[in-house]
Length: 435
Ligand SMILES: Cc1cc2nc3c(=O)[nH]c(=O)nc-3n(C[C@H](O)[C@H](O)[C@H](O)COP(=O)(O)OP(=O)(O)OC[C@H]3O[C@@H](n4cnc5c(N)ncnc54)[C@H](O)[C@@H]3O)c2cc1C
Image (cartoon, rainbow, N blue to C red; front, side, top):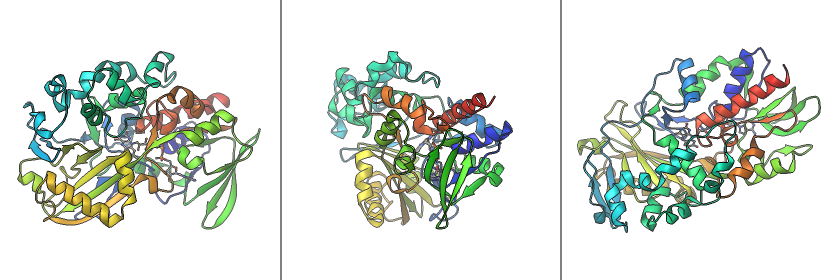
């Protein structure tokens, strides 16, 4: 998204642009999976939800004439499956959390699953959620940046069970990063693009078709005082492409393996080398029937593992359905270590506990591990305690004629909004430098 938006905006401003894309498709981490599923069903490998507050993302959705619809069905009757106990959460009806074997304080029990985060994080979300592109992260937020979300919650009196449920695998994430991210989730509406979120990058790519070169892997970057030379590998051949400026939108997980001569500044090299990326593995299970609907549930579920359970086909034609396990960090690593077949088998058995009948109706499955994708090598940038204030400014800074964009160089890492924000910043820098 960062590369496409930069190309679009620069071309609108009259510049000649070239997009070098290593893979055969546009969209990067906005990627909708349509195979191997049947009946035209689809599910997201990457970006799933578009918050109504993400003005930049919505601006391009509208510009391209794309529709939006809510991400979650309403009302969303989640199944809660924790400590081996299963209950259906009815909207407005608090669950007795003691049944799930959770060791919560009485305040936490009272707050309920939906109120847990709010109990401890509402003030922090208000303060850190105002991620302003220009001066993010402000010095006033340093106290949030220097502590992990787990320690932040502990200091507020949260029990270990509450910490595990709230942080969802991201215990070592800085409170600043976590709260800023939570602000994008706790909004009045989360949308998706019917037909698949990749319609957004694909629609933009269609407008830029002539300036994109696919299968073009950037192998080396050589900035000079007058221009930037990029060595591109395509079909086993290497060629050098020269431009006045280069906006690199490569994730730092990828850029750290690319030769840069002469090297960038020490601070930039450190950011490229050390920036942390979250791990995400998704496992997809296709069933012949939507057994959860027959049981009066939507298919979404809340569990006591670092994962979300989604039913992305709730608005797609049945009778078949897909369930998705969106797993994070340690669990994502464990799933990555399994064979593709084992991932599907184990997740189907787990889904069967949540929605009995999944196993009997199983047809096929699939998995997507972001750490395994050669052009991503991780899901999205995250900031451990103590790193955001030092690393982000260095990540964003230009190096001569090389500019840095992508979600990892923004105040909204992990979101399309961040990719676009960083892209527009780079475009503005080029316009200013060439005015
Ligand atoms: C699991 C997951 C869930 C997410 N959920 C959401 C969500 O709900 N909502 C939301 O808004 N965002 C979400 N995001 C984040 C969003 O997808 C990203 O922030 C955004 O798409 C990143 O765009 P980008 O342009 O920075 O990077 P990318 O999309 O990674 O683009 C980088 C491009 O560079 C290409 N490339 C890589 N190496 C080379 C090379 N050597 N030479 C040439 N090209 C190369 C890649 O193929 C890719 O096309 C999610 C991401 C993931 C992974």
